[in-house]
Image 1 (cartoon, rainbow, N blue to C red):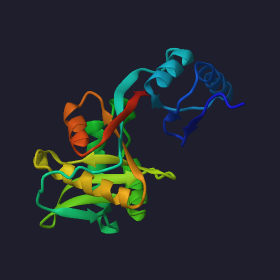
Image 2: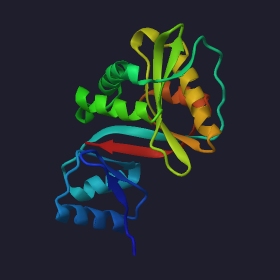
Image 3: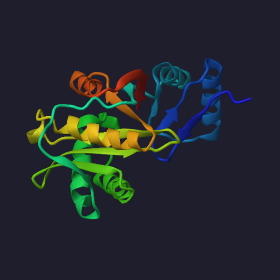
Image 4: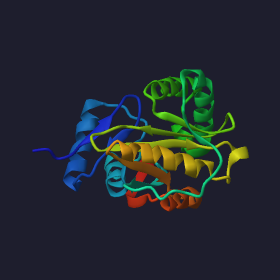
Length: 218
């Protein structure tokens, strides 16, 4: 009988799913016995907190998150520009913006170095999952559609440089990227920092609906 489930892509975080209390304790014991190493824990708020408490003292809360689901886009107001898929010639820009996104949006203990982000950028660009909002030949915002499953894609790494913010570019880009996912017969998932009211409002205005709370421990 399966009591619990989790997944990890070493050396990244342990990702939890919905589990019973009995399952959480069984998972903790199994991982301790295997001496598996992971820098953090991410999962549904109750399960993540239960795991950390059962583990005992190693992890601290880095971010409360909200999980959203989208099945129909509510188009934002028209803004200048258009979506453009990132190309191999854009790797340096994608990498630089990922580093900025890392520093601006991720918990301090979860930061990765530029080499990690360059490798990540290359994978995403090659797969055709990295996108820019282009205004007269200049990139002003970035968003990815990654982690494909049978039914979903996750919209992530949404980043707009400080000089281009509050112009509607991110909303327009996320709307377009999300619609591309829906056109494939899938729906979109998206995580936000629960403490950031601006990003939460932007995504809800586009039609993203709250699914549940998540927690990220490091």
